[in-house]
Amino acid sequence: MISFNRNETGGPRKIGLMGGTFDPIHVGHLVTAEEARQQFDLHCVVFVPTGIPPHKKEEAVTHPEHRYLMTSLAVMSNPSFFVSRLEIDRSEPSFTIDTVNHFFRSEDPDPELYFITGADAILEIFTWKDYEELLSRCTFIAVSRPGYSLDRFRGTLRHTCPDLLDKVHLLEIPALAVSSTFIRERVALGKTIKYLTPEPVEQYIKKHSLYRTDI
Ligand code: ATP
Ligand code: MG
Image 1 (tube, protein in one colour):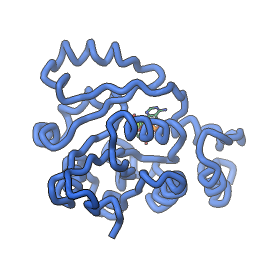
Image 2 (image 1 turned 90 degrees about the horizontal axis):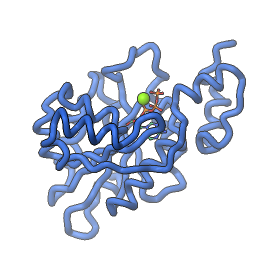
Image 3 (image 1 turned 135 degrees about the horizontal axis):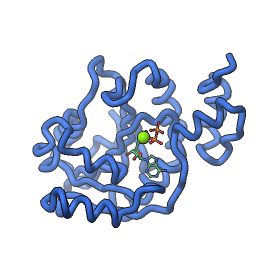
């Protein structure tokens, strides 16, 4: 049994969930999760790598086991961070509602769930499966990303869906203009990725020749 499923205190636990392709995980993800953990006093943050991502072409994404292992290596040094195999072990594409329900039902009493995501993604929530149930199950933490200001997000939300303002907490995080795409491109160009991702992940990428286009 993984310890984030244990209820040591007897009270509802505040669990952060961070979904992503994590191809590869990088400092932007880690700083975001840590900031959310502290600001919202979360017991833990569980990273949930996607299996077959519904929005990305399967063949364009690195094998789930590689992404799972890199994510595990990245969180090793933080006792509050965990990685879940839930989505990568499913044969079907996962919807956020299924993942959230899984974590909701895995604890007694019911946990307080916080879904951590980039602010830009939240604006598409109406297209997500069973979004009304989703909003009743968890609180959303929408984080700033370089190139995407929370002021713009707040304005758009107020205009398009004022009801969501109560359901979504906005979190300004130290800007890190790094993305997985940026890392993949740098590896393909033979450029260094030192400090953009934890060292064990950098070593893993090297060892398995991930993201190289010359082999
Ligand atoms: P890709 O370039 O392949 O799309 P990505 O860097 O956007 O990768 P994802 O795995 O797609 O990473 O993102 C997972 C979550 O982390 C998303 O909610 C995304 O908005 C958020 N995120 C990614 N990078 C950052 C960053 N630098 N700062 C804040 N949030 C980020
Ligand atoms: Mg992305």
